[in-house]
Image (cartoon, rainbow, N blue to C red; front, side):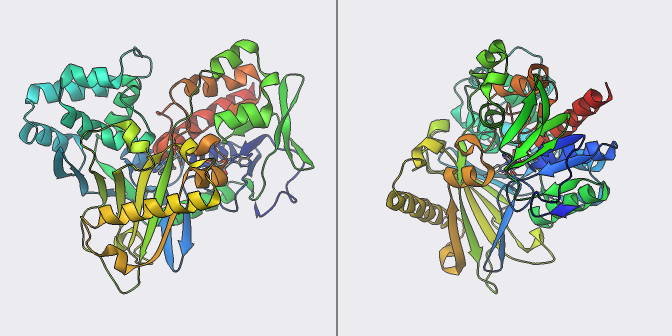
Length: 468
Ligand SMILES: Cc1cc2nc3c(=O)[nH]c(=O)nc-3n(C[C@H](O)[C@H](O)[C@H](O)COP(=O)(O)OP(=O)(O)OC[C@H]3O[C@@H](n4cnc5c(N)ncnc54)[C@H](O)[C@@H]3O)c2cc1C
């Protein structure tokens, strides 16, 4: 059942899921399939969280459908359905263009190996050794080595190679050279396995299919239902409060950010001191800016690649990538093949960003800063699609404030928290029985694949808890 408000929800469920990001959707679906009664509450008017889209002047803009790893094929088949799996297709033209190198790649291990040998002059033995090392990295390995140290070990002094290996991952999850090497290794070997993939039909189609399955499995869905509080009684979860309405459940899964979950939805006072001590070390990840460009119907643009990692910065530098005046951005180009049923050309420029740079601007400064990123994006795009601006009949920008408004995430974080957040998320239910968290934490669990897989893991935890 799908309701556009909380009014028709029942008084009690086995599980309440707060938030309908890919993690929340997946947990809700798995638990309903396992026979539990599930209520899914979302504050926005549509499902999907950051996996979202919006319509303007006949265009559909995808916000976070830029590329995901091949692992999505197996994950969607196993945990959703074959129709969803069958719509996953490869993006074959990934372009890098910066002062250190320009190249096109299919972004898989075979092609990267050739590029590293033939274009960067690295020996086959070193390349193989690097790939073998990162592919064996796992969560329980030593966390003291940084990504920078890992790169220096295999490619000393080669900032061009570091850039090739790191830039896409920085866009994909906000990580920097100072983050633990294992987080890089796990994410990179996922991405580099068989290339970059997308969902044909767009985010709207994917979320529509997920909604159908949730309803078929009996999940009660209420949108425009912002949870104000997780209700705790005698140290255990009792339910949630949405405005005046209290709904009871022995388990609550929060897909709200982990910082929101602890500080705002629950309250620090309910957690043991040592848990809060560890939680206070958690750092939230950066946010994003985007510029959305719609090409007038009847006009077209040439095929210049699916995903363009562009920069005029002399070196890769995570701080530069997040600055308001960054000259590093990715262009995702959506050709008619993206939505064969409603062919269109749209372009999304994405930049990493710091919430604090945007917060506190006056209304006029904010508008001017948005216009500035639009101008910079067009000026950069001109190198690949000259005159694209004249073909656009819609342009608008999103900032960290936009992401914060739509998802409520602390500082509009695009990728949850840094590595320390994972343990907090995984041990939440030990601090407060019945309270679980799913969603972007710790770099590894973020992104479309990470969020869905984490949704499965948390659903298994909740199922075990309910069956105790
Ligand atoms: C600009 C951008 C580009 C990205 N590009 C990619 C990409 O190309 N590939 C990729 O794999 N990943 C990408 N990502 C990351 C990916 O979108 C996210 O990691 C993933 O979608 C997060 O899922 P989640 O389960 O953590 O929940 P989220 O998507 O964060 O959703 C959380 C949900 O909880 C809801 N909520 C919060 N608080 C409450 C409350 N109190 N009551 C009710 N509801 C609440 C929010 O409204 C939201 O719907 C991108 C992210 C951004 C921002």
